Length: 133
Image (cartoon, rainbow, N blue to C red; front, side, top):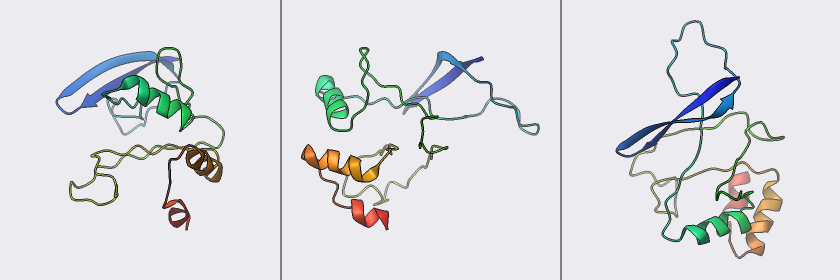
């Protein structure tokens, strides 16, 4: 097992973190080391951190740990085998109706059950059926 190093990036800041261990990935014969291999975390600032953590725990069902965050395993059953990364044009309407400059896609085990969970908590997902087609 090799140490897993992660670079954290935010506009204007770059940091290196060592986050435990990971299986060493086989090196590609034609590529030198020193490139991004995956997503190591998502970090969100909030005016009301406790309320945001409670929303992610209660509405989305994230398994919040005592330290205030969640660990989401990419090798979980029925989890997508990859994580997509895309830079969007500032003029893109892809996130509409949101005006947020970022979007985080979460994998779920059962979309219909997840949408029902959201609806039960008053969180609508109006385009769920349209996106499934």
